[in-house]
Amino acid sequence: MKLAAELDDRYAHREFHRFLKNTGRDIWERKIAKTESLHRFPHPSPNFYRASLAKKNPLTNAIATFLKLEKEGKLLRKHPTDELMRACWYLKVCNSLFNAYPESSEKLRAIIIDDETISSFLFEIDIATHFFRLELDVQFVDFANKARFDLLITDGQNEFEVECKTKSADAGK
Image: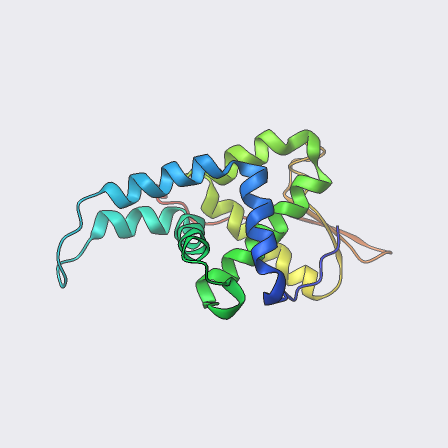
């Protein structure tokens, strides 16, 4: 799979809509409602639990912001933020994966929605992005259940297997 590493903000809203269709808009609305229903301490008191939930799945905040903009009738391209555009890139890659690996769509959906697995998956996308920028072909072979590594990078002549590892929250336990 080759992707242009640039993202045109004029079409960013399409990626959000495709993603919500692929993963289920209602699931994200429930996740957002759960976060918003938590007690919010007045400023300057910290809201650590809310911040912790937002950090676990950064897509949730971006989707909440997008849905709020949409509800207010505002265009994403006129109100882009770094957070929204970064999330939009993740959504673009996810949408491409849904298209490239339809047989693995349930597995992909489960990884994306699970707050415990999403961060390592987004790290894989960050690593793949490096290779997309080099205009190399990137295959997420782990989704196709073809291999025991995460990415297969090819330049037409050579193939490279990439295993993406991050330090988990329970490291050293």
